[in-house]
Image 1 (cartoon, rainbow, N blue to C red):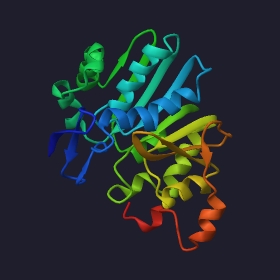
Image 2: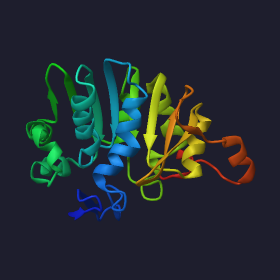
Image 3: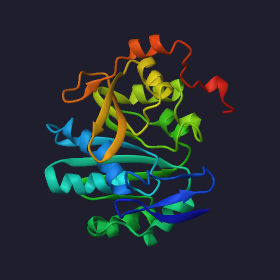
Length: 248
């Protein structure tokens, strides 16, 4: 069961009874959270690339994918985008034709319709594929080198299988040396799982939104590196989530 909920920036998100969580932070705002925690850093850190390959975990209401299109069209019109997104809830995707999206998404209404009815969209600058399947399976089967992963699944508390060390190992395989992972989670267990897979962990902070995390194998300018060895030393009992401890 889903119900639409207005968040503090005026945009709507949804509440999932299955996970007992909203799809976005109602405090940060659905549109604002997507922009500040995912889209802005992702595009800024790949500003020199003319083709971007994005993984959007999971599609949900589609804010990250749609805002990527808006941001590309506004600031990087010559950049082509390839977006792949798994989503477990097929009924949710088909219902998005009627979702009360922010006005800035109105130019993409035909894309929303194609995704909801056909599972994707393609033109000369854009390729979007939404697979109705388990994200864990999708990440194991996906091939190639990708530039960006929006790690935007339900929280580690309610959806732990998308936050384990083994899950992030699958993402590490897909991220190139220049690749980045963006996520709202600042939990030490999440950051430790990233760190254990060779990622350097960074703080994403700013005015108007709560802290978030960026991870990459490369050194990033403009973001504060999280001193993981110090964090581990201060929290010697902390452990990353592991598949073996979950009923997978």
